[in-house]
Structures are given as C-alpha cells and as structure tokens.
Length: 371
Image 1 (cartoon, rainbow, N blue to C red):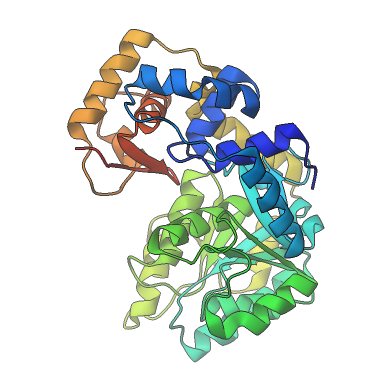
Image 2 (image 1 turned 90 degrees about the horizontal axis):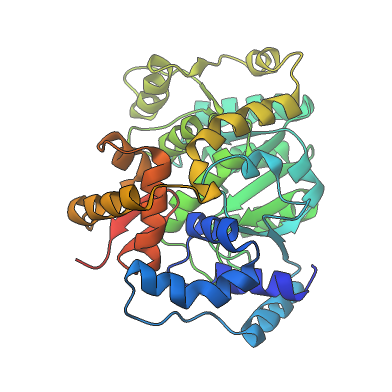
C-alpha cells in the first residue's frame, strides 16, 4: 500500500459525504488530482447551491485508517493503480477505491460470475457445483457474493482453482455468520473484495453495490436459480447495463426459483445446459479485445468526464431533475429513459445536485434527500 500524499487525499475524497463515485470521477476530470479537488470542493459546492460546509476527513484519519487496514491484512486499491481490475475499470460507475484481502493476482485473470437463489433447491446446488467446478477447471476465476445457497456452492466448488467473493460489508465483518469459515478459506485460496469501509455492517443498499461489483468484475454473469425481483436478477440487469454477457440455466415452470432464469432466457440471455456451453461461447476469445469493446461502448455513456458541456443546457437539466426526482431510489437508466436528455447531460447534472446536498447518487441510482 503506497501511503503517499496523493493516495491519502484520494482516500479522504472517497470518504467525503456527497462525493459519490461518479462525482469523484468528474472532479478528477476537472481538477486532475484528489488533492486539488479537495481544495476546490467548497467553491464548487457553493456554485452548485450548497449551503452547508463540506467536511472532508482529516489527513490524520486517513493515516490511521490505512494502519487499521494493514493490521487486518487488507489492501486498498485506488482506481489509478495497476492492481485495479480492468474488467471493472471499463464500466460506468466503477468504485474509485476497493478493499481486498487475499490473492490480488486473480483480478488480472478472466472471470465469470455465478449467482443464484439463497434458498436454492438441492438440484440447483448440485448443478451449480458441477458447472462451477468445470468452469474453474477451464481456467475461469469464479466470482460470487458469499451468500447462502448458490453463491456458497459456487465458492466451494471453485476454491482450488481460484474464487473471488464480493461482500457488501467491511472485510473484517463476517456475513452471513455461518460462512465465516468459508470466508477465511477464500482469503487463503482466493480473494475477498468490497467497497465498504472496515467495520461497516451490511445494509440493504450495500447489497446493491455488491451485486453491481460482481457483474463489473466479470466478463459475464451465470444465473443458476433466481426468483423474480431477486438480487441475482438485479446482478444480471447490471451486467446488461455494463455490456457484459448474461447466461441462465432454465428451470421447471412450476418452481418459483426458475421464474427469474426463464425470464432472462426469454429476454435474450444465453441458455446454459452445461459448462461446455460457456467454454464454447468464449472459444477463440481475445480477453483484452473484449474489454476494449466494453470500454468503447461505455465511454459513449461517460462523455461527461471530459467536462465539455453546455452550461445553459446543464442548468435546464438540473431544474428538470429538481422538479421530477422524488425520495424513492431510481436507477439512472430510468431517469435518462424518461427524459429528453442524454446520459452525459443527466450524469453531469446529478453530480452538481449531489455536491449541493440535494440528492444521494450512488451505485448509478439516485434519490432526492432535500425536498
């Protein structure tokens, strides 16, 4: 862990309230370094209409937090470092800092997410283990969310070949409690990774961050069993937004745990009956070229990073959002879909509103907090 001033200021900016991932990235585009962005924050926020002062964590706090991470064997990986996974870097809303513990080299290998129901059937668990073991033997690093059911089965089957567990809590917290032993085994043989600070207990919203990170780290997402309105289906939706591949195992129409996977297949997901289907899908596959293609697609959505946009139009978009956003959490994609503005225009305006303290803007979702 490189504890130079640039990194410590990066950590401080990351920990600042009202500076989410997208706003952080926009500030960097304008001010070039985290240090300069911190200096400019009061003026930028005041210009955006913020009345309260900004409270940026101190340099002393940053140094002590780094010491705490070192004590727990946790690495902090900022967006600019070579260890930061490129599969995640090329998608919109990528976290500007990751917490990781274990084999960092797994982040540089091709990976596939395997997710599914927490209340999986015995057949589903057995099939997930078989699929995952064969995919692991075919040199895929398996990514999952350390949840009960399918996630646990996937991690266990991939322990020997390499698995990455993505969590929605601090890496020093064991959740679910019954997976403490599995989490410790993954640290020895694989990697635990997450966004939240140490000591942070899981809450509903952090599982959304976790699901987005699972798909972001992976080339594609394989869903084995999933009910409608499940976290696994949400992970598949994130994969589509991120231009990643989606695979699903079909199930019996009478089983509610199959409704989500059958829905995905009806809507374009690749039907999977065995691991060879996925191996064949990626046959003669150029990993770096695929990442480049994903980056090209997502860069079209991220044009706002350049800082070049019409100020008059920006004011118009800000007013539109002030009038139409409510307290309910809404995906940014829905905001764009129901407006006459581009993704770049919406995101630029959301950054201003976040700095003003009017909205919460995280995980590519938004809600109004000052009504």
